[in-house]
Image (cartoon, rainbow, N blue to C red; front, side, top):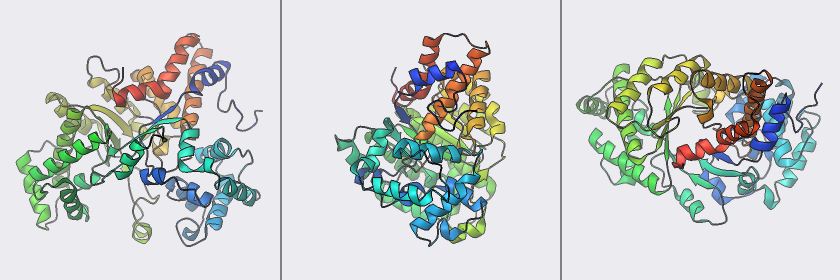
Length: 468
């Protein structure tokens, strides 16, 4: 019987232990997609307590607390911070088998040196020990990033953002990590949202371009792409509920746009036509800047209408969608390819049944001299657990080239989430070790070590920053 959470956690064979400790462990982190606040990083203010650091904004934890029967007052409501922490501590012992059980204790161990298991019996002791440490300079936001050895952070940013905090961080020589904005134009793409017209006005203000027509909107978006590029942006990101692509002319898109601004209700087909047109035009802009385009496909969001109305959007009531994607994705990538405007693209699926679809799709499009131009992104959201990560890597290896994989990301708002990279690296090393131990891969440790280093960091750096 193995003890819990030792230095060889998740490493179940000698080859895995060697690969992790000699190749994976010391590699820096290239976190190309997350939701950290640049303002929070720049201000570098100490957190008052663990609830502010650990639970605020973390819908992964909120979701499990609700499933455990915790009332909303102790999640997003009016309970005080200690009561919310205690509610999480009450939940954790029941999470064995869920990655949050591992991540919770990895975060306590990695950042606070606490080996105790979180439970109602240890909650007060851990609360007080962590809160005392949070008052020390080495527990400020920037120090969490430094301790995790993070070299690059790709945040998620609205095109109307002035990116002021990115600029301040860029000018701060004491902040060693590179933090770059990622262009997330949901406001432009989701024409059906009630906030669409308000967002257009904000875009017009920051771009000094008229946004009363599709032509004007495209010019305004290009201005923002140019601005993001000047501020170090090298990637975009897109929420794609269903990957449906309908070839649409600019004239047709203008008619749909005008109909929306006149207050008329759009049909589902018109919404999809407009979104298809705009996504294609954005793809061409990204290719022009040699950016990476990320497509996160298949999230079914805000399913609980009552709770959406009570506490707002994106508060933990999302799940896996089941929309088809193969045909629409093929059409979308192909139309950009035909125009010579297909950017490097990372494909993420939320439904694991689509693993083979994406792993196969990525082989249809390539560019000479660019290993893995189209990437099958790491196991995402409901899949970033041991089984999900292993399945994603096995499916990629079976159909594509695992050695070119760009690896893990946090997709998180929490500064403590960098343990997920360590979690992923242990799973990767264990998988490769299993193949060696079973005779499925040669016991060539130098080559395997380099493969691990590449997947852990080097491939992503080369892919996003165009480094050879």
